[in-house]
Image 1 (cartoon, each protein chain N blue to C red):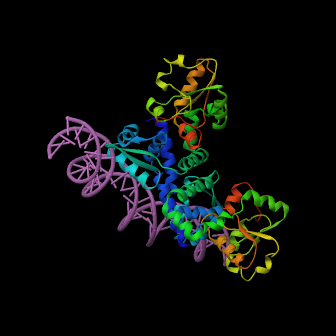
Image 2: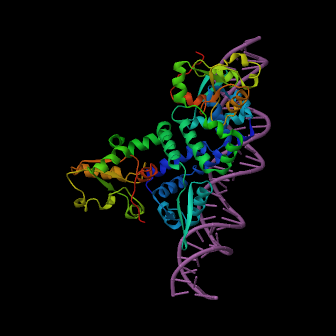
Image 3: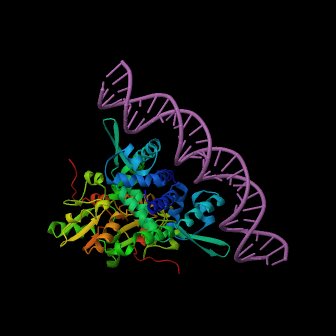
Length: 219
Length: 219
DNA sequence: GAATCATTCAAGAGAATAATTGAATGTTTT
DNA sequence: AAAACATTCAATTATTCTCTTGAATGATTC
């Protein structure tokens, strides 16, 4: 009907199309962890460098990513604006409406555990009380780019060998990359079998940071 | 990386692609007003019936719409699930990140007015006090499908002639289809020039209904 | 049951998108 | 300045979307 409304819908549709490819969503998930070079992102996603570059440029053109030159590398980071809110809204819709997603979530993520997830607000408060140990199970590189204050980094693969780094008498809260990242689910399951009192943080590091809560990062 | 995550991203991408066409977004906006036949929706959007039907089926396949047979018509309505939340998140992102959208919004919607918009919560309370007149400026057909409790329906085109239906001593709150619908903006501007105390409701009817607030509809 | 109506289906042309390849650009290092 | 490196660009092909057209389906009305 009206012209300006049409134009806005056209722009919104372009934004939506930008999210309309699994590779770009996966790239966004990695960008949400922190800054990364094209080469790194290509390796993380298994894409060719040229292909990754094109998808990243697509994301950048529409504000989902920003870049910075660092020597001969180009570092991509998440754009600003409420990007994670959009993704979260999509996830909620998918879990509600798309049977396939519900099944995968039910089969892989054992939502029972998720029911015991601790909220950002609760963890934030308990951090101030000092009554909890925070465990970051992401790979070391992602931890280095930024993590929750005081978190202990034990990548999932090293968990068995480094149990000594976890106090047995305090409750542990594990987190990882965010929704659909299984690392923290597996860590919680493994530690529970060993008798630890352990819960999962809802979502993960990017959402914590996006909520404006304090983080520690390399300067 | 992991298989289930890939599958979920693939599904999310499909959802996003479904929103990735201006015609479908426009159809969704109309569906948010209430149930409509294919023919009506085609007329409202200016699409051919076959084309509208295909887009509508696309929306339905992905849960954005549902259907019901009524005689020889097929009535489409908005699917359930947090669809409007996703659209709202998209709008916020676009207004934040997409220069074109910011410009159009600034030029057409005079966000100054929007600053004086009344929230759903406030209107809800004032409705209970009875201290406000609610004005629905949508066309009669959309009003008939559902509207705010006690609202007066004066389509924008008839506003001049039907001023008598508006009490001059009470504050008026106007609303229309939702974001990017200019009807209520224009009504507010027109009534202000005539000396009425009048504000806009934030968003519009679909958002009010989605928030679980009471509505009146034909039975 | 024949005619009518609203919607859907099926096929095809045209446009847009995605992945691959190899060359080009802009940095750093030698 | 030349070589090495990370990224981007450009061209190509394959695939997927979009819209139109005309026929098919399902339901009502005459």
